[in-house]
Image (cartoon, rainbow, N blue to C red):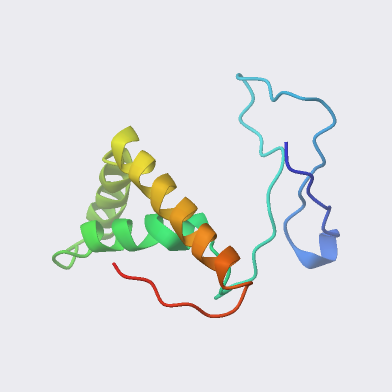
Length: 111
């Protein structure tokens, strides 16, 4: 488990610290989170893949209603397959390695 730090209520979202090595499968509460500033240049997994994929699927054509927008978002999320996530994981690992080689400096990558 990756340790996280708490945010005060004045900062918005609270991220409870996880005290045990597991999270109950029946729980629907958020137990931990990682703070990530907006527009961070860090290798954020959601920015790296998910948001672009969802946006591309949802807005292929303009949704005519709010309900259609909701349906498209749900469908796009459901369409993310384990194989896609595996490929994303491999690409993230590759980029992390390039970042290490560049000693944290800017680097170019081929798509």
